[in-house]
Length: 260
Image (cartoon, rainbow, N blue to C red; front, side, top):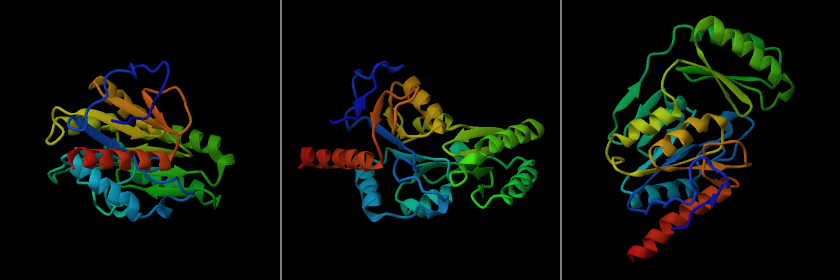
């Protein structure tokens, strides 16, 4: 089976045996992995070619494909047209199993206060955007990079004052209900059918994906970093979204050819 390029010096040996298609379980981020990052989160929408690849590949894997993203489950379904049953949203705070069971925490009571503070701060700069995810609230500064230090200072103070968890991402800082991470979501899926006994491969690009890369390593699997090299728990790398989609399409096509 073709696989992404190994990362030299990775924490887990990238030359360890890559799982066969019969044992592989894929866990995929959305932004920067399945879809290009846009300046505004809601600019990302459905794309039929990508979603068709996901449908075909999930069928080949017997349903062992899950989405693990910072977006809400509802927003993931909007972008991917509900093609994938197993989905974890808000970095693991909400989750839908492959069987359709919904698992989620109650929102932290301080989120309302935090959202008001972020909205007041964002009102002074049109490049800032507040995103309410119910279980968390995010402040995006991709269109206002000069505000990065002030955003991190404000969110750090709010986290300390409220007990919310601060989570830094690519041009975004999020205040979230304390609870499961992306890594915890991967671990939970692996304990449920159809993922039981599978070898996990997580594909993601952001700092928020490091928990998932570490979890896959702990379960004998592999992490695939999308984009530039950095200090990471991932073992392999793909350069961009187009390369991810090409690789996923090749996985599905190779399996079709093998079973033809």
